[in-house]
Image 1: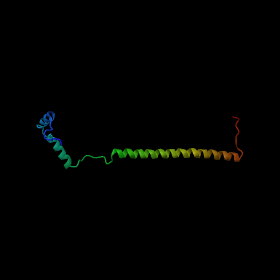
Image 2: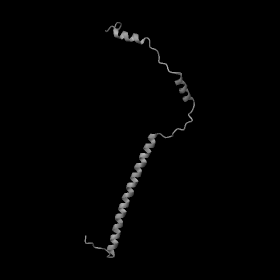
Image 3: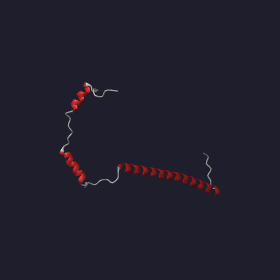
Image 4: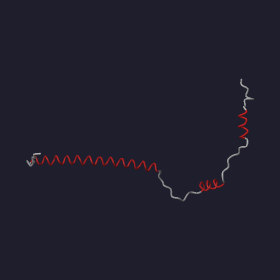
Length: 103
């Protein structure tokens, strides 16, 4: 077994002696006054009800939805134009109104 009574070294004793004069840190009275005022009374200042993280998230979702809707709109316009060209060409062919170009 190890003898625990004389297990101290001079360096440890020196550090323990330096800690003998330590006192608890003190705060200024102004800190407690402001803390008490904040805890007791509600602030009359207007506070923003939503956090910025929710606003940014909502805007990202709306931008994504907007981009999706725009892409669908452009896709339908190009298909409508193709169908319109096909219908005009079929109309011209039906009445033999096609123009043959030499190019």
